[in-house]
Amino acid sequence: ADATRAAEASDATRAVEGGGGGTATTGPGPGGEGPRYHAIYDDGTLVPEGAQPDRLPVGPDPAAEGAHSRIRWDETSPARSGDGTGRVYQGREFDAAGNPVRDIDFTSPTYPSGRPRTDHLPPPHQHDWIPNDPANPRAGYRRSRRPSPFVGPEE
Figure 1 (spheres, rainbow, N blue to C red):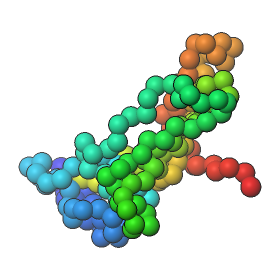
Figure 2 (tube, one colour):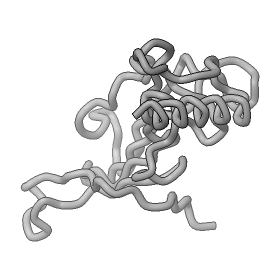
Figure 3 (cartoon, helix red, strand yellow):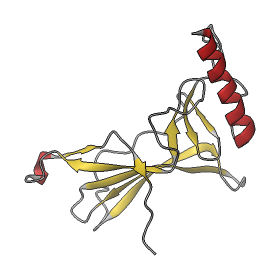
């Protein structure tokens, strides 16, 4: 167990030093001390536990007409450009009927040490929303647990 904790701390150090965006150099030690992390951006910026932005509101934007997206904005994370602060943490797409289509995640979950979880793809990736009953859209939708590679708009 101590070897695993040491490896996680070492991985977090490499992620921060290599990515340049994080603020800590080690993860939790054997006694649980030190910073704890929730997620990581593709440039290595770590999101501290409890600092992730509020979840997206349930359902589509009531003011939207047609297909649209809702954005989960991280105001505390440094911008990729280095100018100002903030970046997109997550987006959710809705079809013209207001049904969820997919979530696009711009972070991946981490272990408390900051080491990326092995069961997730690196960011960005997407989670499709799947109908509970394809024959009855009113039965609702569920978010897929397994992410897939992000597929951007066709050019």
